[in-house]
Length: 474
Image 1 (cartoon, rainbow, N blue to C red):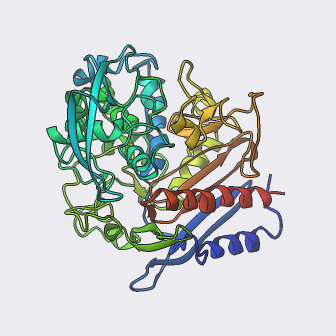
Image 2 (cartoon, rainbow, N blue to C red):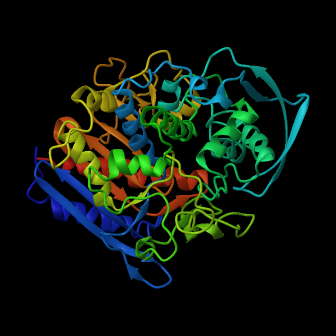
Image 3 (tube, helix red, strand yellow):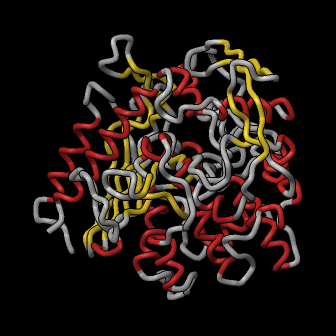
């Protein structure tokens, strides 16, 4: 596989057009794409609207949820050392998780209530709820497939805004509120990384609260990779006889062998890489619902500026919470080295094997059994397996297509029978095609703080860009 002769001009036009699409005017972005031996690496637009500073190819991007697959990869390295099995209970390794869990369920006549302030609308909610003990045990495979029941509050926010339809439950809001009673900084979508807790303390707060949004085994996208990060710390200390922070383990087992030289979780005061981090913008849907407006992320919430925001969390504030859920920061070219290693079958450019060929296949095509995917949230994400028009599901930190499924009931030109992909909260996107020896990484820094803007972002940056990328292959 290789690019068509005119691939460069076609991709140039596509990404330049994203900067002036009135539905979602992206300030700037970097693209890194590869097909066979051909490479495309370009910057578009600006990294800061106030200064018109041009975007550069060495810009440092908040990868957010594109960190999840990197975390699963490191976990697989430890799995290949025989340190755990996928169906081991999480409580075997994290004592605070060795407990009975409860699912919180919104109920008009529930015996408990919680006051919650929406970060999307500013509305004050009085949530009444009940609890029921889970019948399933949380297993490591649930962490890797985001089916552990530790769902983000974001989706309950969207449901509240839309009147239902995304996950059809406000359990995420209730669970998040109960955790925040134990520690107010444990997690907020407006402040993902700025918690003044270590990863161990953060995860133990989740365990102490003891509440989930659903039974383990149901797709419940959220903090599975956060808990997996802590599990990696525990496994590393058990096997090496010394404790290491998650960032240090990631450097040893992934970043350093691949020479991902800019990759980090937090940057220290005065680090020169801080100047290469683009301003983080937010997109808000206009009142008539026809287009989006762009402003600095901190100005897109109804509650006004926060003590800490996602804009500064990687280089200012506590810098304590290192998570393989949303925590990585790097250039597009650094992230490309991960894909290159997978295309080489788990081997670095210098010839070091990091993972077995079966490990690469598992990461890209492995599917856990006995997961419940016929749910509104899984369908909204397009990862409901045979219940999606084009069968895909979420395992090992990203979505993978099911080439062997016969339940096809529709497709888009952006679909592909052999693709793994996922994106991040600021609309970063990664698409990986092992059979085609191709991939594409798109890095804007535009958070989507209303459901309408989220839909625009997915359609324009993910689906349209995938379709364009497929069209330039020879």
